[in-house]
Amino acid sequence: MAIRGIPSARGMSVEEFKEWLKQFDVDGDGRISRGELREAIRRRGGWFTTLKAGRAVRHADRDNSGYVDDAEIENLVAFAQKDLGMKISAW
Image (cartoon, rainbow, N blue to C red; front, side):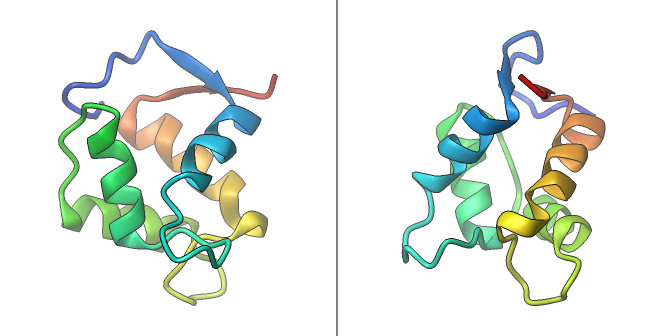
């Protein structure tokens, strides 16, 4: 299931994905919340519900903190590739 409004042919590297997400870390704590992730996707032109953002964070959040931190970003990349149709490469 791709994100409506985001062309899946346009890819980015994992590092670009991380840098892109950092600009939406509103409180500067180094972690991505459900709301911050939803805003990031919406700013990219996609429609991303709060429910879907919550599912993405739950998938990536291995320590159950409610946030995605640097150690969990690979889990979010996997979710974005599989469930959102985003193209994210290792380089």
